[in-house]
Amino acid sequence: MTRRPLGAAFGSVLGFATALAAAPCTATALDVKVTSVRAFASGPSDAQLIGLRPRLRRLVGYRSFRVVGEESRRCTWGMRESFTVPGGRVMYVVPKGMREQAVVMQVKLLDGSRALVDTDVRLQNRGVMLFGVDQQAKSSDGALIIMLRAED
Amino acid sequence: MADSDWELVQRTRAGRQEAFRELVERYQRRIAALALGMLRGREDALDVVQETFTKAYQNLERFKGDSSFYTWIYRIAFNLCVDHQRRETKEAQVPLEPDERGETIVLPQPDGVPQDQPFDRARDSQIAERLREAISELTPDHRAVILLREVDGLSYAEISEVLQCPKGTVMSRLHYARRQLQARLQGLL
Amino acid sequence: MTCDEAGELLDAFIDGELPGEQLLDVARHAGGCAVCDATVRKLSAVRHSLAGSLDAEAASLDLAGVWSAVSSGMAREDARRTSIRRWRAAPAWAAGLAMAAGAMLWLSTPPAHEVQRVAAARPRPNQTVIDRLDSDSARLELRRERKYGTTLIMVSAEGDGQ
Image 1 (cartoon, rainbow over the protein chains, first blue to last red):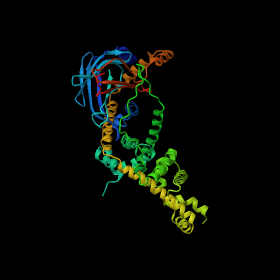
Image 2: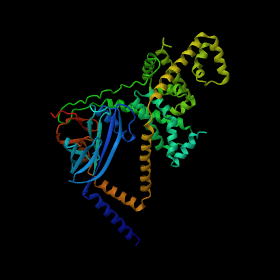
Image 3: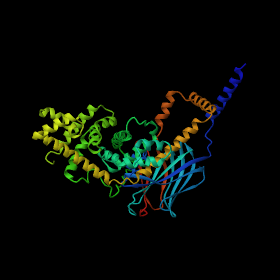
Image 4: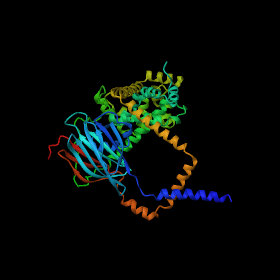
């Protein structure tokens, strides 16, 4: 007799687990993180960039990287979110949907009213893509790297 | 009187961050000297210093005080230097590819990026240059032994603890490394 | 003591690693032997050159940023430990549920040959596809790293609008 309640309990656990496993991805929002990184010719790099540093070095050419700003936002699909970037710039992100494990979104980097970049991208879920603003002509601070991450 | 390393470790474990700061400030320059000798560049050395202390904090619970704190931290630094070299070599072997639109784009190398030479500021540039070459030709194990002894002043027993090898191995590696450097500096000393 | 015997002990001699009696023996020998004395001097000179070079280089390093980087790493580690502690404190039924869900997922995994086919078609772990790329006036450059597929769009803000 004691087996029945146990069996029922196990059955309901399994049932709930099955429902969890089979549920379609119904996330209505997306976590977007924009990290601004200043690249320098020398000096230490921030510990949080250690994993990415070899790639940054090869892609950007500078040796040292420090985080100068970070914003995380829960973005609703189809809605525009703005992120502040050093140098008075703004990055607009419009998440449009998921396709083949990638997040489809429009990204616009504005310097005043001028669109430095306006792009439609498909970014791997939890992946990172980079935007670089070369400031060599303006200052000796090196480049500004903007890291964009998205996760549903 | 300054607190002992062990006291600072205990205080750090109790949640006192400033105690760990004291340990960082106590040893960062010595770790930097080791990393400068083991690696090619100043930035790489700085990265290793930073990673060493971050990793030490992450693993502080495992430090039982059987050895001294500084031999423990030297061991972390040495392993990070070896990992660093391995990673850099591996990365250098992966070529860049053209972007997906088929264009080959090469970003200009920023002006003023110094080509790092850890020995540049040595009092005698010729000796420094020959030493740099000789050091870079040694294996990481030989390099570590001579740096830990000559630059950091560790005893044979401490070096054997850091590198986890017998004292006899330390002595033979040191003998070999010194003769290599001595041969390279022939006529200059 | 012969030169061969002393030669084997010279490293330990200059390192102060010999016991008292042997130390004196080597010192006496080197004092009367020009060859061993010269070796001791050369080994000491190597030490001074190496230590001098690296100490000067280490002294010139700007270590001011080290603590701030380490302390931010410490804060991340503390946050990680806190979340692990919370997870461990979760009730046992939650762990059971997670295991059941894991088992269901495992059971619903397609056969091995299908997994292999899908895996082979997957892009690199961090690859980004760019469907459209415009700019009002800046000069854009694209770069992709081979190993992970990480993509960089580089903007030259001083672009001439072409």
